[in-house]
Length: 302
Ligand SMILES: [Cu+2]
Image (tube, rainbow, N blue to C red; front, side, top):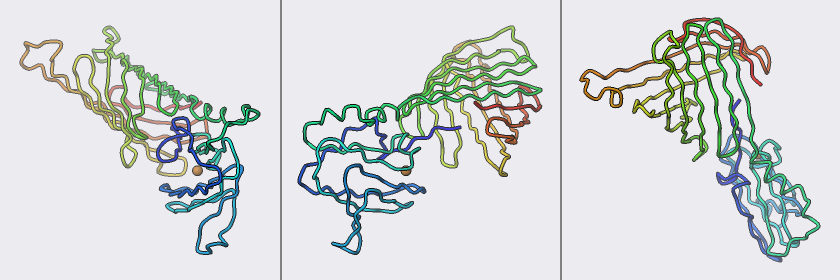
């Protein structure tokens, strides 16, 4: 239930230019795998030599596996013309951007214009979306996410049966694999356990997936209340995960009552719980949240 993006040199296919090569010359490419997965790299239309200790007897291949943290150098002679696809043959990796177009400086063969390549380039940047719905004895929650390589839209709402509400709509822009800036609005009840006073505030901030996979969210709202939050889910047994969220918001009273001397307030929100995965789409969950109390229920993913 997360983004899944692969790239070459940190850049997915949809954001690159072609790699220009020359006819009747040898092109040599060194592939460095800085990940912990195997990437079988495949070049269309050519056989390349995999340079190894055997020199002139190095093997000719069209696909070579680059092992985790490994390095492989290939070279091939430019005896073709037009555009040729070069990609990781793990299809999930290819579809999410781990590919390039190698292009001769020659006119394009127009018969190739229906070639699936251009569809692959646009498909690699399409939006994927997913949603999670929790229905429990103390609260219910809904989250929807739609994401492509750089952009993400989130709609989330939590409602406690004790009349506490928090909803949020945000747009995020990925600056880097793990760092994004976001903006949006939140809707919250202002007095505890009552929906009489519901406020809408604008928010902006950064979100960062930290080392050890904590989700960090640092934001400021339109009432100048800074907030920091941290959340994490950990699989502790094959089907059982524990999760927790901690939020700390400070209100210096800058907007509402500038004159009041003791207008500093702060609010801590936290929740913790566990989830047992019944199937790909359903989980049993139980949690405690300091706004909603304790309870248990069902979580669905689709
Ligand atoms: Cu791969």
